[in-house]
Every structure is written in structure tokens, then in C-alpha cells.
Amino acid sequence: MAVGKSQSLFRDKPVKVLLAKPGIDGHDRGMFVLARAFRDAGMDVLYAGLLPTPEEVVDTAVNEDVDVIALSLLNGAHLVVFKKVADLMRSRGIDDIAIVGGGTIPEPDRPKLEKIGVSGNFGPGTPLSVIIEHVTERAAQARKKKMGE
Image (cartoon, rainbow, N blue to C red; front, side, top):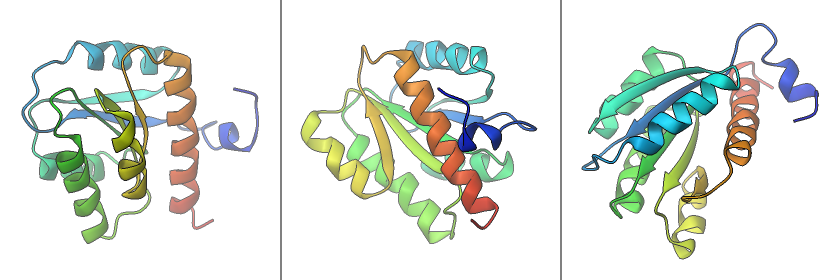
């Protein structure tokens, strides 16, 4: 990513991302790959562990003051579970934490997730550089909201 306005937002404080697999999905290998890639890109990374509830994900995100929640599911429940996280965020008036998604998400479901505020929705094989760039951009947008821009 070229040095620009969004990168200058992170000069004093790195992007802080919460990785979460809410719902019934014990396949966490990809989360560890992402955690390492995000860390190597200079981000602060928190992992919510296996099987957190959507409420626990949102509570952790708020308590830890993250910029981005990165959700992943491989079990096909993404429309229900990701929506629950997004709905909880809206119901609590939280609009300054970005939500990105990934996992085995069929192409027809991606616009549905975008509509509820979950962006990215990356599938297996997506280059880590693409995911990192997207998370960085979404974090910049979230920080602008926090700063009232």
C-alpha cells in the first residue's frame, strides 16, 4: 500500500483487529494464518478463541477498542451469524468498528453480507496481501468515524 492519508492514521497506533469464529465452527487453522500475517504487517491482533457468541465478539471488540472485527466461518452459517454480530453493533450504536468476513462464502451471499455492513468476505486462496490491504482500509475508515470525520 502506498503511503497516504489512511496510513498516516496509524503512525502512532497500529491497526487493532479482533479475529473471531462465532458459532459452531472449530476449523481455526486459517485464523492462525491470518493472525500471523496481520502481526507481520504491524497490526495488533486479538483472537477470540473458538466458539464465542456474537455477544462475546461485540463485547470484546468494544472492551479492547479494536478497529476491525474479522469474522470467519466455514460451516455455512455466515448469513445468520455475521448478521447477528452486525445487528448487535447497530443496536448498541457502534459504527466505528469495521466488520470484515471470510470463510466458505458462496458468491451470491457476498452482496447480502455487504448490504449488512460486512465487507471483504474473502474465500480460501485469497492472497494475504489483498486481505491485509482491505483490513487496513476498513480500519482507516473506522478511525475517521472515531475522530468524527
